[in-house]
Amino acid sequence: MSEDAYFKTRFAADPRRELLWKTLCEAHFSKLFAPTHCVLELGAGYGAFINNVAARRRIAVDAWPGFLECLDPGVEGHVGDVTDLAFLEPASVDFAFASNLFEHVTHDQFANVLAQLRTALSEGGTLNILQPNYRYAFREYFDDYTHRTVYSHVSLCDFLEAHGFEIVECAPRFLPLTIKSRLPVSPGLIRLYLALPVKPMGKQMLVRARVRRS
Image (cartoon, rainbow, N blue to C red; front, side, top):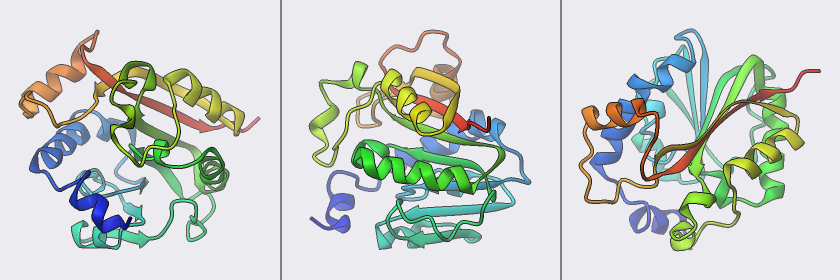
């Protein structure tokens, strides 16, 4: 099964996704890094996150060659497997981001990525992971035939800590699972949802971690 086939079927382009990420970047993620920072997105897909980032340097990685056509000018695109980050300079990345990525790879591949990020992340740099939380999304988890591994917010944090990271933040119910629903996608509703102390239908977790230095 080719990358192109996956992007044409399971992960087809959707303007609602662009609106979602524009709002998420403005309302939440832009507060987590500075304009002088280097931001890396792993598994960038259509570039909806990295294109909406305001940073000194923006880097995107994906195995799908077609993603290069989706990137805005100024974004550095690298076509290849996320387990090959040899092009990154040591201590060069301040904010690494991966959305709905690590459930698609094996434990060994994930560990490989973490080993490379331990070198690539700057002092104080963070790894930020958004992905389905199996504890709350178990019914839909394997509707995506490319899902390989299962993580809850507990097991993901444990895996990160076992591979040299410490947890900065763990939000078990950060977002709903998908934009493919009857609910409208609007900036106002997204901002309201982010502000809710209790998030109904929250099935995606956000885990933030940094390299354990001691």
